Length: 283
Image (cartoon, rainbow, N blue to C red; front, side, top):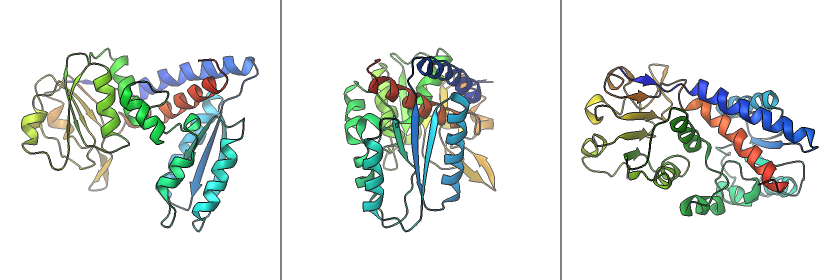
């Protein structure tokens, strides 16, 4: 039976370090501030924003909320972002996705200053991840790397397989594993003989968003399995991986919920702290 990678435990460890650093900065007269923009009434987005606000309060980070109506125009949103880009007390800017129809998402994300882009979606930050000289990393892949480090799971020289090629998880995940000297294969919907590839992986990361997609026959004995999926199966929250059967083969595995999920907000807080330190010439 595999060891459980406890995302809540790792998240608490990361947050405690952030809390101490934020406190030290405050004692030097330096605040840390995160601006969160929410456009419209998406229920899931409202929950995410509330969770981010709570995390900021717990860690001593100033949270600034901008709740805009559904009918906000792209120009109105760009005007707000321009103001926040020039506001010294704002170290990080996060625009909650998805945006309502009619707003040009790409234009909005590109308008956020790369120095304040704590989601790491701006092309400048994406390019920096590609060359391995980055300030911020998208929160989910960053959280996975933090978990592997916490459990002392070696990446160097290991065969790593990432299922999924999204800009938010799959692509940056592959790059981070490569920068850590893993040998990486990225699989996707057009990959042939998927199980032949996944069954060779020492580290397998699944981010396809399909319930019960990864079965035991797709997993190598003793592999580390990271499940990024957040799906519903008969109303019950589950991942991409069939946990019951895969956990019997894996050496380490993340559960859903309680695995990768708690790490995402912790890494957003870490990116915000990094932004504050960079803007104050402390790193």
